[in-house]
Structure formats: C-alpha cells, structure tokens
Length: 493
Image 1: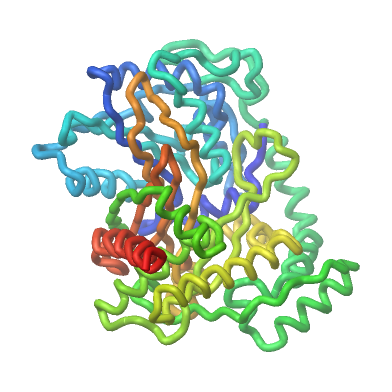
Image 2: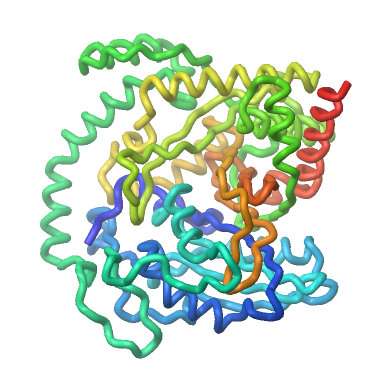
C-alpha cells in the first residue's frame, strides 16, 4: 500500500462544486475500418492495465479524514464504471465534439473507483472517432500520464502485445466483472495501521511543518505572491544561511499577477477548444532567433493572450504571470502513481506591442526562470501543501482558493508544453492523428489553461476555460495560429 503525499492529496482537496482536478487527453483517430470499438478498448484496457498503476488503484480514505488517503487495489473493479460510448449528432464537427468533451471534462470522477474514465466518441465528420481519457491529478503528473498513455498505444496497427508480463508488474492487474481478486501487495491498508499512522503524523506535524516553513522560506523570493512581500529576499537569504544552504540563487523579478478577466472565482461549467500548428514552423522560429521551442510556445501564448485582451479592452499595463509545471523526478525509475512536480513562474510580456520584441523578452524571461530553477529545483509546492494537518487542509482548501481568487491571485494562467513522440502511434489498430491535452482550471490558477503536446510533426493545443472567465476559447486558438504566422512572416522579411 502507498499513502498519498501532501501534494497528491491537495489535488483531491481542491475539488469542489465548481472545480475538478483531473487531466485529460483527446485523441482523434482514423478507426481502421471500424476496429476502434468499445469492446476492443475494453479488451485492451484489461490486458494492459497492469502497466499503469493509475488504472488499477482506488482511494481508501482514513476514518474521519484524520490523514491523507491510501492507494489500494479495487476488489470490485468493473470496466463499466470507466469505459463509456457516445455518438455525436450530425454533422459531427469540431465544435460539437468540443462541446461534448467540455461536458465530460466538467464532471468529477467517482472516488469509489479508480480515478479515471475513457470515452469513445463516434459520429465525427469524415468517419473519424475520438477517445477522451481523463485521470485524476492525484494519481498522475505529466510524466506518469505519458507512461499511462504509452502503455495503451502501439507502434504499428497490428501490435496488440502487452509490453511486459503481469508477473513483472508491481500492482494488481484489473479484472473483468466477476473475476475473483487474487493475492497481491495492494489488498488495502489495515484500519489499525491507518489510525496508528495518523496518530504518529499528527504528533509529528509541528516538527514537519517547521521544516517545510524553513525550506519554503529559502525560496520565498521565487514563490508567487510571497515574493512581493517586503523583505522577501532578505528572509530567503537568512533561511538559506540558517540551513547551511550555500547554493547561490539567480535573481528573479518580483512578480505580481495583474487584474485580468481570467482571474476570479470559477463556475462549474467548462469550455474547450483544440487545434494544431506545424512543429517544423515552431522549430524554424526557434532556430532563426536562437531560442528554444518552449520559448516560442510561451511567446505564442503571450501574443494570443494579448490580442484576446486587447479585443476586450482589458489588457493590463504589466506583464501577465504564468506558472509552468516542471517534473522533478530523480533516478530515472518509473514513478508508478502520484506526483513529483514543481513549477517555474515567469512573466509573460503581454504588455509589449512588437512581436519581435515580445519574442525576445519571453526568451529572456524563460532563461531567467530556468536558471533559478536549475540553481535549486523548487520544493516549495510540496512544502506549502505540508504546512497544515491533513484534516484542516481538507476542509480549508476550497475556501482558501476562492478567497485567493478574489483578493490576491498568485498567477494569471498555467501553461504546459509536453514533448511527445515524432512518429505515428496506434490505438486498437486505429492511427492517432492528433492528441490534444486538457488540464485544470481553479480559482487560484485562473479560469484558463493552455496545454500543448508535440506529436508526429504537429504541436497540438488544448484549451480549457471557465466561460465566466474566458468567453471565447476558439478565438484564443485563432490568435495562437495568427501569432505563429506573424513570427514566420518576420523571419522571412
């Protein structure tokens, strides 16, 4: 058995009537003469789920919420709780698909079962099909999400072999309905052990909280919002001196998230848009300007956000503040289930009018953020989640997030760029044409999230928004494409 970390549990705690905390992907497939069916997907999932712990483990809560929950095998697993099928009405266009995906994305996962769902969506124009899959962020981060995806995909249409044997797996495999539960190491935590562990952790909470405070204080000058407090830099240097941390830190600007339409309490509704740009064009801009592909992606986002805000006469005079999730796994081993992530925080120069200048300033800002992160990979996210006892955190998080969204949002937006394979992949024999990642919006992080995934020569963007915070996600997608065209034109001139 394995207990959730404070960070894992925070993704559970943040959920409320208006907030979900799962990450998802929308795959568009050529169905290979009808081979992509619900039955075929069910067979594949049952065959390969042992390769991904996130698919086979459910939550076991500690009585009265005295401690963080545990992961354990689901003895009553039923594929019917996870695999669904939908047929779109004609004509099955992109916006119809986006509307259906947005409705599914807005629904919380059932915590009585392993925290994932897969939806086969048929009726798309041109005979294509879509497969939308969501997994709770408490179970996966970007790296483990990629591992889960890789477990289900093949390199060739006819390759239906599991990649490792069940004997090699470290978790109990999923079972079809009615199949008896075998023995394994994840039968479930013992009640007495859970309560004993909760008692020990309650007794040691003050000491652990103090360590978390000291560690977080060492990076106080880089934590969103906290870095703007008077004396933040001095406190950070003092904390490093006290702990004997002699690692020099690069200076980072004091970042204050300006007021934008994206920030404020989110509703329970979601809107989704998705689309692609050629990866070769993004690489061409990066090469011509001596910057990275990720710097170009951030520039496209800055340009799109600027254009969208200008249309609404809502562009602030200061740069927007973006959080960029970063994996911090060490050792190269498979993580299994859970999160090992942190975040870089950087300004987005939306206040810069010229496209070329905006590109340069974005590159400079991202280089500064990367230097600071390389100096001391931030643990502040985990530390902040560890400050309060589990029962208090569980009850207080939704209210604190809503208060922060009104009084002092730490960032304006989260932007993620996930590298993927540059060759075609197959699901149940159907070729994956595009894969659009979709993520989380919250009161604190802003009502818009932009995530992209590079796959088979394209950069696939997925945008998720609360309609009360961003009323036109398709317009934003259009601005992303226009921003790339503008940069290409500048390089050709």
